[in-house]
Image (cartoon, rainbow, N blue to C red; front, side, top):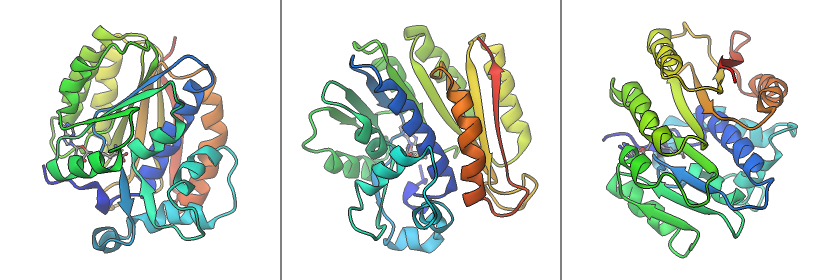
Length: 278
Ligand SMILES: C[S@@+](CC[C@H](N)C(=O)[O-])C[C@H]1O[C@@H](n2cnc3c(N)ncnc32)[C@H](O)[C@@H]1O
């Protein structure tokens, strides 16, 4: 486990992922009844963009910093409010990881479970939520957590699966974990982030999802770089199973505008498709 998210915090992939996460949670918060949030690969929760690690890669400069300095973009107000909650002044210093973004949307009746296996990251996450009674932090394998924490008593909610993709087996583990999770909780909303480094593994992943027999699988892909560039991470995607009604229409309006702010040249692309419809 070498991956440390601080090197990538606030980059384009994070911005895309957390904009999507904000839309999903906002939609869950429309009903008064409580919802549950499970983050299987939670990270540290908060990242200091002035730290040596974040400064070394400077990835956030092409991501959140561009948005921070650009004209307001319709549809991402809630996400930006979650970022501003950690940066009350004019200067951007802290970037919220998925747990902090999610916490922004929890109402008093809602609850979150955050799982993180890396000892240092988990220790930071525990400090971040030390006095928060709505949030439980555990040092546990995220895939095992899909068995341990589902189904939740709230009976509605969101599971975010955002692994580091250090191993070639990650896509396979993801499919297996999802199968376990859905066997326990079929009506849950699931969001799976994935990198686009080259097409073949992504296509295999999509085929495996189709073959799983699950319905209502929406895909959103976001590539600020052309896919044949030499850059390591050309883009990324989010698979959503059981997405909120009309989310596809919202994304068709929002993502092209977001891409205009974040793309590296005119060859970047975004795509929203139903991998499997109703
Ligand atoms: C991409 S980062 C998570 C970023 C976070 N979700 C966010 O959006 O801010 C992946 C995290 O998963 C952790 N990790 C790796 N393998 C894991 C496992 N099997 N179970 C739980 N966490 C794991 C890594 O230590 C790393 O912090």
